[in-house]
Image (cartoon, rainbow, N blue to C red):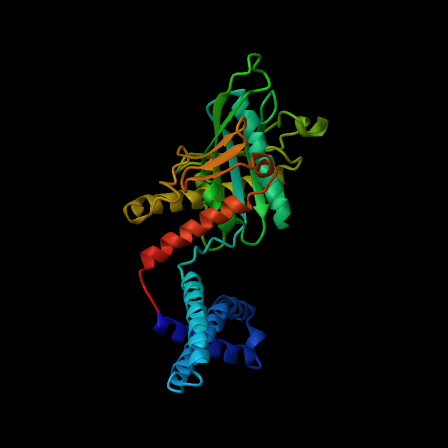
Length: 356
């Protein structure tokens, strides 16, 4: 690991030299690439420099041990250096963990009602509100891509795009089955019902470099939109249904009055679904080497239970129970998502099995 850190230190010097050249900005693509690389490795190099400084200070303190008058001071300095070095080792290991290249991307969040009928559809609306509130707290933008409302409220299916730096890295562990236990408003005898929704969090695909969709492999149908939207939306063939023939994936968008915008939205969702399909197939092949934090990635797998009578939320992957259901449903997901990320990093560190 030290060799890698020393290499990154040399690389930072090289990048600074390249960026300082008079014609550095002549190729904006190369300039942005170097700038992005610099921003990624600079924190690591600074942490490594602090680590080396702490090591040097500890060596100096040890040399002071030979002087009887300085021994007590040296012992205090050695203990302080040890604590500092231990923390810097942890920081460096975390910064050197393999990074998911999609972590910084915007995402599509797809919520589908599952078992439980109308109550499941109502809960899908609650989950959408929860993620929307969380996104607003992060300063991210939310765009409705597609919706299929339920007659009694909520959604049979709803897809939103959450646009913001780091959205996927923060929300990617939300994929899976979310179970709710509560007394439905329509339950006359006060019995607790259990229902579930599935959530899929998909990183936005870069159509230019990642997912190339052959137009000849698409069937595009237009039809009159149904449901809410005013008179105009129901009088024109503005709704769009795109079928990707090789995979059978189907995407519908009808929430915009413009057929062109609905088509663009549907293509964005289709690209994200295709990217997600490729990723899940790759993950399945690597399943034997993966830890259990995010389970198999199967969206039918129960990951979390929301128990309204007891006011608790339990994440089954990390055995975390929080008695703050109200706050969580209002978008306070920081503790949950932070715990999942921390556990994932701990597993990565254990797998790394390397020391400075």
